[in-house]
Image (tube, rainbow, N blue to C red; front, top):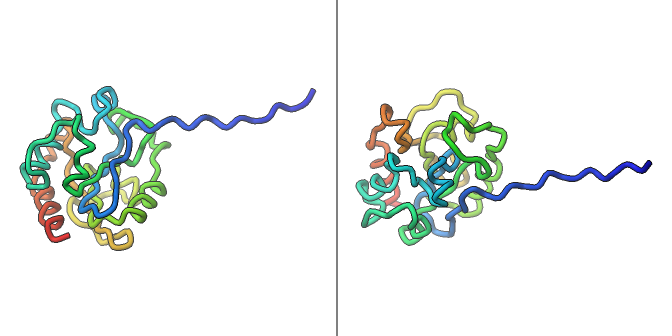
Length: 176
């Protein structure tokens, strides 16, 4: 009996599309789409998520954007991606197997934003291979791109919330 050819597992589609392009000041990178974001098909769509109000408060957008308007961040020279593009849910529910640091590094090298800002420590730890991290700018760079680690805007991370680091990214972005 002939051996059947092995089939490669299909690659699942991205939960949310990247919003990237040339000339970006900041690319925000989360761990993965949260459950509410995956259902809505929009970044940071959870009712308790502070992402969109924070962008507006710190001056990165001139008005408060709704999650459904996520593609319009390009108008403000901002971008969006996630370290894990094929899973969704809370950080604690992610397997880690789908984290793709090489793909993220390639995207950043290709688009060359001034800043890569991690929205929370989980994605930053996985990408940087670091056990413990402080919030703020890192020494590591990807080409000319500075790396920042920010407190998560997730409602589940409220006890660690500090807008100071988001304001610092906004100030650095103004100089970019």
